[in-house]
Length: 115
Image (cartoon, rainbow, N blue to C red; front, side, top):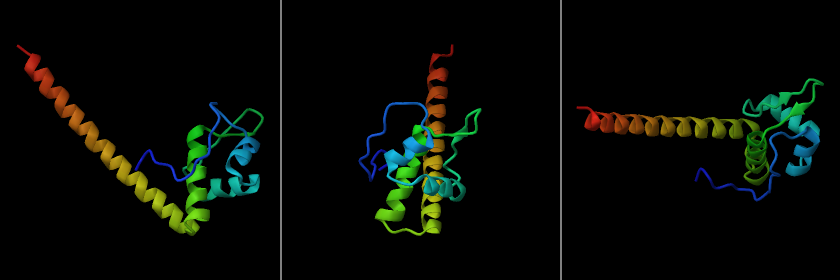
């Protein structure tokens, strides 16, 4: 379910987005984006030299997921925060397991090749 997205919004192929662009893509006002930034630590736009927010594609995907949880699934802010944290923990554990498997496999290959 990791690659399935509950939203079908096309994000332009760019590295960075200004808050107005993110507002247009997500359909959310800028003040909501700024508020969510304070509520959800996963949204971390960089600041340009002039102080403007600069969002990544990952930030936008997170914003769209939060929008789906809050508006579509009717989660509370706290519920959405807990859901995202739990999901991140499970993804982190599965990634660690995968890395451990790869490491063991590489050691096995190395041992087979060693004289």
